[in-house]
Image (spheres, rainbow, N blue to C red):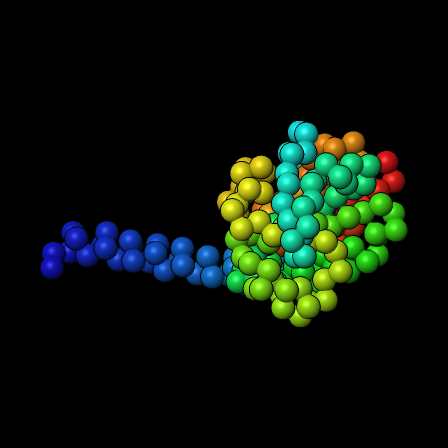
Length: 182
């Protein structure tokens, strides 16, 4: 190899090594994600709650409009979804802590039958209403294809927050609890 080509290649190699070291040390200094920092922050929105009619686990008809006057957290999930499973204990705990303040959590299962959903509800000890949506009507109504997805509807029937991804108890406290006092 000629001397004229060795120097540029050596400098390029040295530059790549230095860049790799810089990235390595930058990643080492980055704060580690915790459950609190890893949680998804909601997007503020403002639009009327969709007209949505589904069925309960007991095959009873239900309407979202029937919950007007309460703060409603609609959570769309599936039993096979790992982030959905991860957030269920926080959703249940938040519901238990605030249901007497006019909070309702509605878990809408996306695409599964009652026979699949019932054991999941029992395993996670869910006491909030669980609705079945075997045809994807809630996805169309809220214009999403992501699971989990969550929406907060205020007492007047306006969707105020939207989440895509798992949410934590602390984030629920931060964003939903103030609506309970309105």
